[in-house]
Image (cartoon, rainbow, N blue to C red; front, side):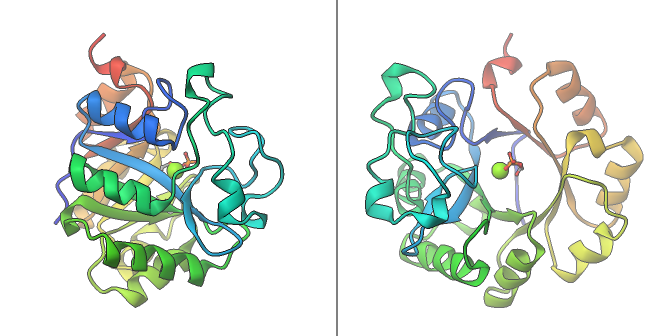
Length: 240
Ligand code: G3P
Ligand code: MG
């Protein structure tokens, strides 16, 4: 069973450091957060890397689709200068780099799979392979995706992984979908949630997670409805 903290560092601490970089993950740890969320994609030559957008322009000095790049060239891009000059040396992390960090930091990780332009099957296989080589305690790992084929494949290849079904729009068949996948969590855009929906998610036997909240009043309200864990960009929100 998953034991999640109230806060999960979304893409690391993306208001304090460039999102989905090792700097962001280290900052999350330094700020006292015990879980982080990151986005996983596949390069053209089959390396799993941590990256959010389908294209490189917003958060690197590269151009075009990530899935059209090979890992050696991608590894040379500046993934932090767009955020602040002092982060120019940040690179797009590989999943393996993050798993090595998890080993020493003991952080729990929500891996969000984004198949984007790549093969879903290959992404799932490579992610599971990486975890075999660098294992994490099972209770520290939650996989999620908006892409149902990715979740279905994860469940097909591993009967025991913890899955979270992601929703950006309310879907009336959430209960059936989450049950079929034997998911642990239903993860919603926080705007979709109401006290009744949170209660229904719990009554159906799932954890209720919400993304992404950057206002303390909203955070407190969701927690008062019983939301189990909330994705946040800025941990300082909690101490102001
Ligand atoms: O997993 C929660 C959240 O990360 C989903 O949206 O676009 O930030 O990956 P996005
Ligand atoms: Mg994400």
